[in-house]
Structures are given as structure tokens and as C-alpha cells.
Length: 183
Image (cartoon, rainbow, N blue to C red; front, side, top):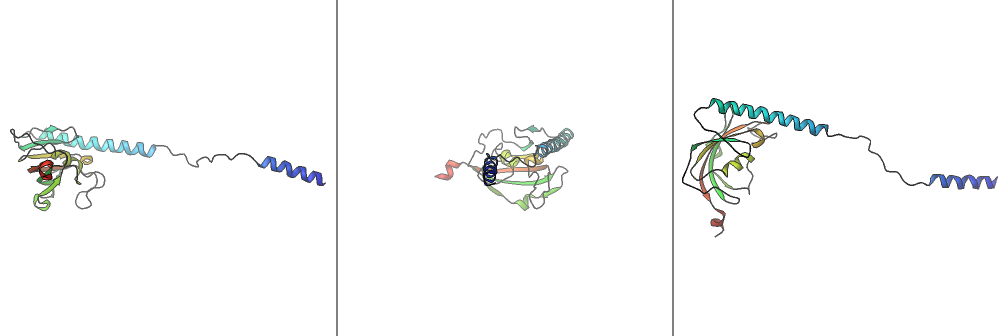
């Protein structure tokens, strides 16, 4: 009996010792949420761009320019002799207002006051940041920004809501080059 007991214990020890197996995930997630989000954003962008194109087609008074950044603009006041545009680190002084595409004023130029901004070193919404780089001192430009170039999904936590395309009129008062400010 004792031999049988030892034999069973010995067999039990050998059979219970095996290499550990990797645990398999309980849920296998696919990229369906991300794919749906991408499709939703593409549809939103195409609707906004179609709306902007309709506004441009109806506005026969202005010649709109399409930027490489995905927004549109026209000059109210253009300086054809100046060559200096702001670069990284330059300080610009400008005024602007913010409207929705229907022309409803969201922020007046008075509310926003005069802004002093270090190009690409401070926070400013993407479209305006890129738009300022196209301007010369003394120019006034009106920009049409789709929501992904403006405040996007989050808005500004005040007056601009989720996915609101914007129209802004910007006057660039002064450009101070970075090399001038270091001396």
C-alpha cells in the first residue's frame, strides 16, 4: 500500500509540473471605434467645406484664396510692397473678431482687445496661428476656418461650441522680428 501511495504521489508531482501558459485576452477589441470616429470626422469636414464653398460661390465681391492649411481667406487691405511676414518666434500685434459662418458675432474686436502673440510659442487656435504667418504688417484679411482649424470638438469653453466653423477678420498691426527683441 505504501508503495502504491508513493507511486501515485510521484505520478501526481510529474503530471502537475508543466510550463506556464500565456493568458489570452478575454475581449479582443477591434479598431471599429476609431474607424467610426474617422468616418464621422471626414463627413463633418466635408459638410463644413461644402458650406464654406457655397459661401464663397455666393460672395462675388471677394477673391478667395485656398491656403495649404485647409482654410480660405480674402484680403480686405493688402500691402503689395512689403515682404516681411512673421516667422517662428517673431512677436505680432493684431486685432481680430470672431463670427460664425452665418455672420453672427461671437467675439467682437473690442472684447478681444489687441493681442500680442509670439508666433508658434503661445497658444492660439491652429487656423489663426497659420493665417498670421501669411500676413504682412498693416494688412487685413478675413479667414474662413472649418472647425478642425478652429476650436474643433471642444470649443473654447465659453461662447464657441462643438465643431463650429468660424469667420474671423484679422488686422496685423505690427511685426517685431525675434532677432530685434533679443538685442
